[in-house]
Length: 110
Image (tube, rainbow, N blue to C red):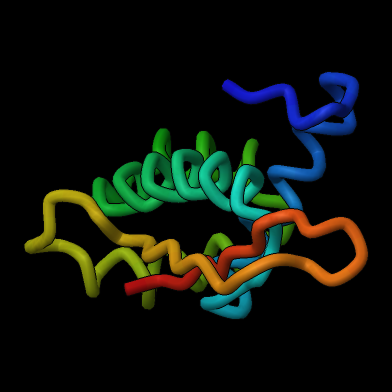
């Protein structure tokens, strides 16, 4: 896991916020290194949501901050991927950020 130049509490909450936004909006734009970390988390949560039982719902609720987003994940997003064995999130590099030239990427649900 990358440290991303943040203390552990800040890093975990930042990644949870980005993951929640990815499930809420379907697409986010962030730095490339953050996107790679969020992709790891999001793929695991979608795999959990595909099971669709109470234990997996509680595990997803521990990571995703919004209950309506969790409901949307279990009812709309996960059923689309029932016959897919991974690769739920696409990472596309979009260039450099103006100001500090950090590589940016777009993360979207396939």
